[in-house]
Length: 370
Image 1: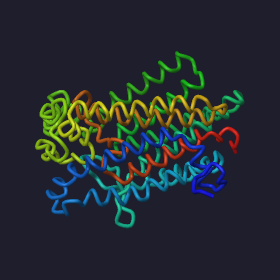
Image 2 (image 1 turned 60 degrees about the vertical axis):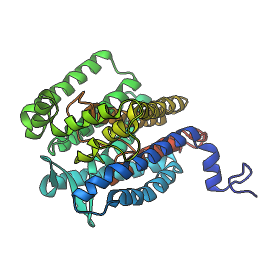
Image 3 (image 1 turned 180 degrees about the vertical axis):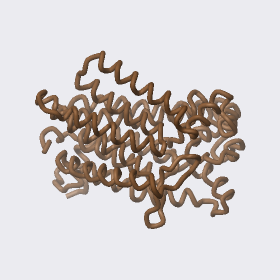
Image 4 (image 1 turned 45 degrees about the horizontal axis):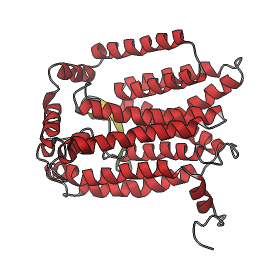
């Protein structure tokens, strides 16, 4: 019997013939592109910090060796197990958010990291996928029984998590979480008036954060005044890149960006790959959005659809925010470009999220719902 033959009934073979190959292919393209960009973007930063030239690349490859099997593992699970694991991940992440307020690692005016066995972990990254699953669970119960109070639990959960995130402060992640919640509410069919009221509330929170948090005020002021040093270098990188770019490893401006391997890796792509290469990256994210929405919409289970569409939404929204900030279209948010930027927390949480999408969009997901 040949390995991965259609007659092979092993777990791995069944997974391969039921999982969406197009979505996996697009994810792998982003991962490969990220490794190639990190080869040039990470070296100057590592040298400037007194580390080995390929320090960040080696660590990213280690993270990938964990993230890819983790994504496959999650994609093998059924809905019941994913619900329970999401509850556990959200609970642990919440405890970590509480801990951050006392002993978090402060970077650029915000405390978002904790040390765990010598590693820096950003708990808010793991809140994103677990919140999407749990909130979809609560809302699906409400859809099935409008007399239930799970919609209220959904509101309370959002308020609690936003409070913890804004205390760091992490306005960008708060925006993604609130947008995900609103997106899921829109799918289940809330009134347009409630949508407008919610949008107004989110806008007021964003406006108030300018006056409440010095960290946010500096970024907004920098955006109004032209973006600051890193954004200036980022724009210069895009200009130097032209249409076809300077070639991998041939960029100069991006080497002067302190966060070129994380928050500004799209600028590295702009200089080395040009507008053409950046366009391909944008198309890849768009195709993931399109493919994810199409295959998730075929599900007959509202929970599966709510979860998959929300994860795809927040995945592409984060990519959009990253790209927009490097182009100085919005104030810098300190967000990674999913599957491309360096970062263990981002890579692992994104792999978990896409593992859930792959699990819920497998051709047997509706049949084996529980």
